[in-house]
Length: 563
Ligand code: HC1
Ligand code: SF4
Image 1 (cartoon, rainbow, N blue to C red):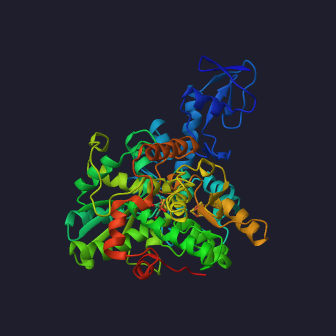
Image 2 (spheres, rainbow, N blue to C red; image 1 turned 60 degrees about the horizontal axis):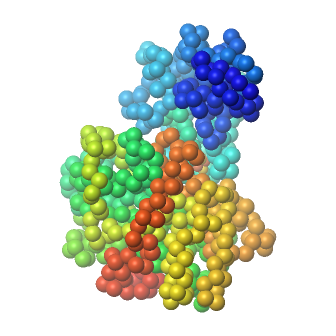
Image 3 (cartoon, rainbow, N blue to C red; image 1 turned 135 degrees about the horizontal axis):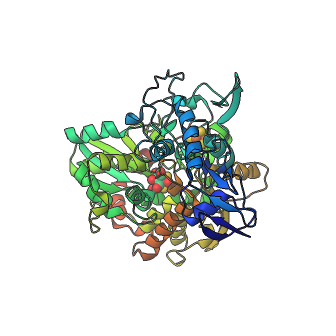
């Protein structure tokens, strides 16, 4: 079928909306309730276009043979302005201090494009701002009822924290359970923060405080950056998704005043030493329950504690790489560098809103002092007028806790933790005879990826759970005795940490795929692809910890959970 859009003849099908056709042509149609992965919630109407002389919502209209479509006429502009003015009648004007300002607010962008200014409204703030969550802030005064938070939490995560209700003839988005986010079933994955087109859902801001602390220079500042950050941060500065921006990050962090710039890839390698050993102990010595679940994703740990406490003993006791890094910074680094623990301030840059809560867990509150997301880091860079894109490409992390293998790097994508573990576990079980490095069957975006690996006389049955909605399926199958695994990786966000709640916006599958490809490209080109070959990790065990899962590691690097 052929239609005409703004004078261009387009070949299309009946299952494609006009909005999708326009997207493919590179025509920018404003949207508020539409997201590429979620589709349209069909409530806002701002995507209006003209089809055969009539105004229609482009998100719910498909083409007809010969249809003539216009996307920018006076009538369309007026309609879009009318919709925006209506929204602005009920929207606070505090853009100056809003977290989503400076590019991430679709409402602000649309108002700017259509010249909608509403400076006179003196609105009453009806809702108390919900700051109860460790990682997020919910300000319903700013909600424009696009329903994307409801859709992503219900359809993608399958947790259903929110619901739409009618109150006094008005629609409202409320929490299904509890008076605030911390009393709800929310796992702080932050997926709703990423799709919220305004400032109603944002990450909890720590960047203002960090900026002030860095300028006062009263501490010895150490920073770790998560694996996924390196392949996503560039997007905040017009660099293509997937590009490894490590060098620019390191240089920016030095300019910001950090004393040492290290990497969570390093502590991911340490995690493999610990978690790999724990798995071997469970497999070969009967020490602990099987299947063993990975414990590095705090959204998953929150979910398990709230919904499946009967499986708590199946969680690896290993702290996450973020927390392992903090624990080592406050012990090993402090001792070797002769810097008192109380002078050290550990900052993490994470693609994840739940990592903020992980750092505050009662079992390990001292390890990491502050967590900022990828987006907050970008704000810090812009606030300090650092020209990120023009920084050099030859810088590397500081040594001591900076070197990471590419096995540690691929932790940031679904299947990566499992693949990294297999590289080391198979080496140990076969005395270095089993040389397989790449496990393609557990890569990619499938919801549940399975494989088994025969190493020596052992056959290890494995599953990778990609996204929290599939965790339910797998856990229920295990309970019914219908699934039999030894080791299971679970990441709460679909795609793994590259899709975390703190990642750059926009975030959708096209972008995620490129991030993932960037990660595996880094792995293929790396000459250090196994955690146990990392010389800085070897030095850690030789000089300090001695044995993985030994006495010292147990005390520093392992934890307990709440049930
Ligand atoms: Fe992750 Fe992890 S991979 S959880 O996604 O195990 O956030 O990137 O830092 O801790 O290493 C996040 C990423 C991150 C931890 C590691
Ligand atoms: Fe749902 Fe995740 Fe948002 Fe919590 S953070 S409300 S679990 S999407």
